Length: 124
Image (cartoon, rainbow, N blue to C red; front, side, top):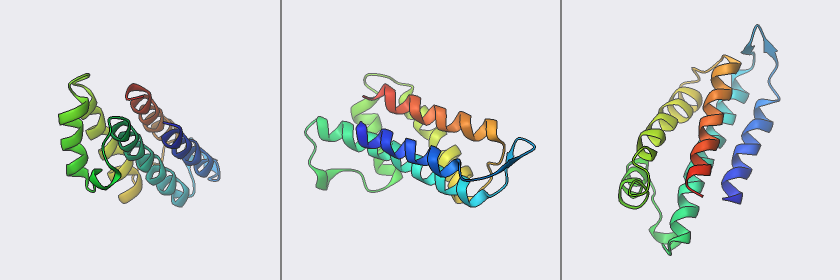
């Protein structure tokens, strides 16, 4: 999971470039970028898990729906909450944070990044 953690660390570095005023990030470009990189870290963590389970790289998921299927089939056997956590992270990091740029409050962004880190730690 070194690569996934590296993505999450990079997301924090990107986020640190934005100024903060009134507990909100001023430059949403950095927030969006950080959320996008953190989400890629989540996908990388799932990929790394599957590769450890002897999946071939060419068979790794290529869409969010394929990731959902892989989580259902190979990871939720161990922890049924993982798929729900993945869905939350997808909605918060990818859709709200990266795609729509809706996350502004520092506490919210930090909480979402923390949830991403906990997800990665669960599938080590």
